[in-house]
Each structure stands twice: as C-alpha cells, then as structure tokens.
Length: 324
Image 1 (cartoon, helix red, strand yellow):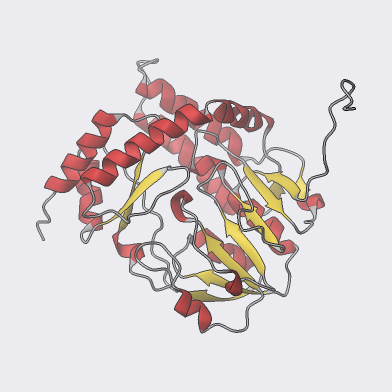
Image 2 (cartoon, helix red, strand yellow):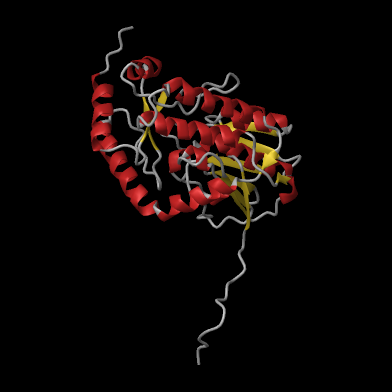
C-alpha cells in the first residue's frame, strides 16, 4: 500500500550546479578544473572566450562554423588531438552533433542565449553554462551545470563590483524612456552602463550571483511562458519578412533574430539614424577568420517589442539601399 503524508521526498541530482556573476566567470571556473587540456573551439565566437582561454594558458585550435551557424563536421574530422570540444548553441539553437565527435571527450556546451540548461544529449563528461544578462533584464548571473565537480571555493561569496553600476544604469534607462524625470539625459544611463562594462572587463576574480538578480531570475521564470510566446511571435514575423537575410534556424528560446547582410556596417549606421540600435554578435577577432563576423547583425525579439516594432524594423531593412 502506498504511503501518504510526511515530508516530500527527493532524489539526488546527477549534476553539480553553481552560480556565478557572469558567463565569463563561469568559463573561468570551468577552466580552473580543466588545466592542461587541449580545446577545440568554433571559429565564430566571442572575443571574451579567446581572452579567457589565453589568460588561463589553454591550448586550443579551431573548427569551422558555417554561415547557417551550424558546425562544419568536416573541419572537426581533421582535428585529432583535442580533449575538450567547445560548442556554442548560437542564439538558443541547439547544434546537431553526432556522438562520435565528443565520445571519450569532455563536452562544454556554451548556452549563453538560454535561460535553462539541460543535458539533452545525455553526455557523460559534460559542462554547460549560460549568461542571464545576455537574454534578460537581469544585471548579473550565470548558471553552471556539470557532470564534473568544479572547485566552488573559487567563487567569491559577494557581489561583483560591476553589478551596482548595471543595476543603476538599467533603472536610469527605465526612468529616461518613461519620462519619469525631466532632467534625465540619455547619456546618464549610457555612461553608467558603460562604466559597469569597463569594470567587468577588468575583473579577475569569480564572484557569486547577486541576491537581487537571483530574485529577478525567479520573476523571469514565473513569466517564462508568456515571455516565450511573445518572443516566438516576434521571431516568426521577422522570419517571414526577412527570409532573404535569415539564417533559417529555430531556437528553443529566441532572444535575437540574427541576419546576414552584405553591407552590415552601413545598415547598422542607417538604423541608428532611425533610433534603432542593433547589437553585433560578435565583433571581428584579428586572429580568427570567419566571414560571419563581417555580415551578422542581430534584432532583439524580447517582450519589450511588439508586432508593430518588428514590422518597422523589417521595412527599414528591406528598403535599405547601400549607397557605396
């Protein structure tokens, strides 16, 4: 007969879990546990990843990412001497990856564009992390999930210094955009946010995720389904309108709609003249060669925006003429 009542039981998790202040801090935490390992990394990546690998004196070589942001498996086949395969699920779209490429290897899954982390491949030697500030209004926070035990003593149990500037800058931006204070200027929040970014770039230690961001993360998860619905709607509209430039992928959780444009820099400047400021993922890295760096630009699709906004951006991009 089934027992009823008493405390709710729970099973032991198969994974080790950690929280840091940022994606780069999570990567540093991971690398401290993978010393003297040889990495294979994508040739389309964030410059921060290269800097952290160099800082930790990690040996690495590159494999190719195609223009659809998927892995070129032939370029991995040519690589024999790697112990760690580093993959990026660009913009929340899972890479198709046959097991033979990571069997008997350590797989690092970069999920900076995803709010939740799952070991969907059921990989034995697996580590993954995200970056909450890249996909939400949260100022800091990165979740690490791993089948390999990492040294949590490396995480300083206090807030990173950049967080207070990011929180302040985001609040100033909200007040400015909503006209809460007549004396506020756009430069007020831009400089504050930029100051926070400069402090983060100089940061050496690994910090814990702030309590404030922890609770904002809970709020984010509570509204997850509503947020996801809006993002998918915006993404689908852009997919229809900008099919010519689309990378034709289907993310689990859309944050951006990336496009390839032959005159990307001119397009970016043109859109800025229309008060549309689109990010570039990622700026060119001198030591890395991939044509994506020169052509990619990203359109945010989160719940700040609606169908009208997506149609406006689409129309401007479609009608844009390169005058060069």
